[in-house]
Length: 305
Image (cartoon, rainbow, N blue to C red; front, side, top):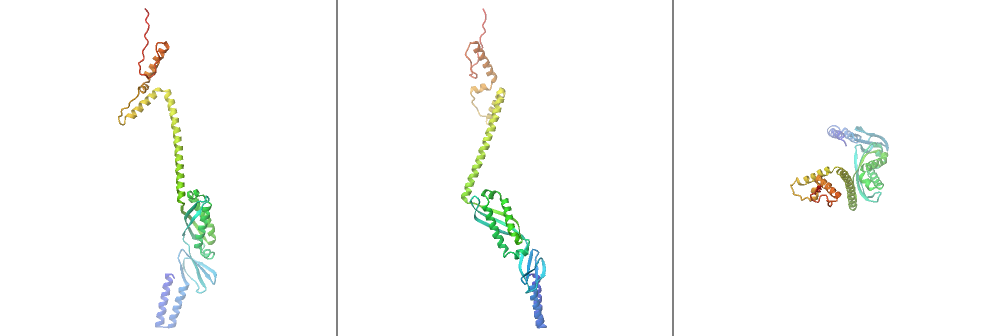
């Protein structure tokens, strides 16, 4: 009983008792009877409510927000439908995916009644029916999906469930706003296997990237070697820079072989090779090896007597 009806009934009952006690007993009884009629006939619906009214077993009307009256005995309110968005949580335990993996899935559905007449007359208990339909549709979706797709494509699975459940509940006057999968639980052993698989994939990717980097570095070295072959002075400057970069941080002392020192002085080496070539050509001495640390000796000129 709504507050307005309660207040009117209270006033009529108090007035009937007072009139019956002081004035006329029959008039007081009439007022009390009116209070009973008002209490059973005057109804009030909130803005989100729909009252489904039958008159002698037939649909009389569906009343919305505000005050309205019904005929006692003849009329009866068989259902009060809440038109606001409702939420229903449902799950599927140990459901097998298409690749025969048992999973536990928790989901939630958002729905509302758009036709109060159908929700009241087309089905006995629409709330229980929604829960059953949602669970059945969820199991069907899991059975037709691979585990990888179920884990990665949540939005597609949500949309598929929304369409399937909405098609089944539409004849009952119920619209499905959205369906959201909250959690997908898989066996612990399978979690370990998937973790190892993901780790192996990452290691494979890392090795491929490392190989690509090595190939790129080798190509650059080949290009650098071609440049140094055509420009010996560039190789000398590079070698000197390497020595500088090695010793500048801590001032370490580095022992350098004499052959490396000779390589850092290509002018002396070139002169030694040229002189050694002249000596061999004239047949006056053995050939000199480049970088052996021996000063080349010039041939003595022959003076005529």
